[in-house]
Amino acid sequence: MKRLLILTALAMLLLTGSTAEARRARTLHLTSYNIQHGEGMDKKIDHERLAGVLREARAEVAAIQEVDSVTKRNGGVYALEEIGRHARMHATYAPAISFQGGKYGIGILSKKRPRSVRRIALPGREEPRMLLVAEFKHYVVACTHLSLTDADRMASVATIVEEAQRWQKPFIIMGDLNDEPGSPFYREMEKHFTFLNPPFEKTFPSTGPDICIDHVAIYKPTQGGTLGDNKTWVGTEQFSDHCPLHATIELY
Image 1 (tube, rainbow, N blue to C red):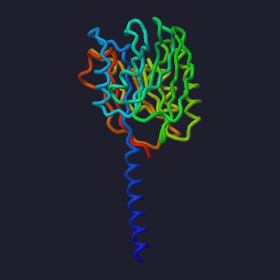
Image 2 (cartoon, helix red, strand yellow):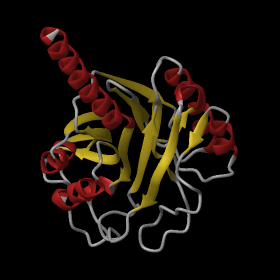
Image 3 (cartoon, helix red, strand yellow):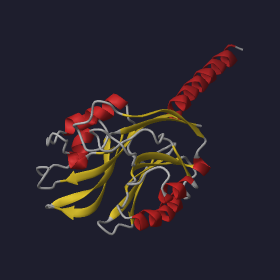
Image 4 (cartoon, one colour):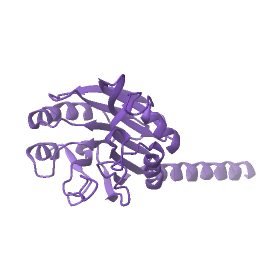
């Protein structure tokens, strides 16, 4: 009988622990940020202050756009890794073009190392574009910076949806989509994704934002979650030409 009571107590402890872990796993803090190759509106390149935005937001995963890697203009620094070092996050990079002796592209910073990573080319007439996909235990996050060309953005939808269909867990896409709510591209994306940031949250330009082109969205068939706190960040006007966009999602 005593042994049975001990085993029961151990089982309850394990169950309580696993339940608490599941609760923690369901709450996901996300940030999307176009950092303008790290240069602020004050012409300063300051990776530590960009990392401070992520720390203050308690971001677990951040989608970063316009990231230099060892280019002349950023002093030969691998910017994503430098921001990640200050924020204590892992850096996953997807270069899109060669630039000034280095690379220029997008990246994902994450508290946990991704289980797998995929880099997928997207249409881009003015410059090549990428979709960076990072798989984690309970969810998948994709980062992108879409083309300035309407036709290229529309053509990107099929590739994004095809990638989302690969996964049997929540698929979240974040980034500078270069388009606003209500546009043909946005309406096409809405057929497949739920946009989590409200359209009245303007993200560009950082000094007096009047349009919303940075977005967080979740693939509908894998949704099963609710939107929590979602906002642009105040007090970062000088850090980039975009506002950082934060979202807290409850995943079931």
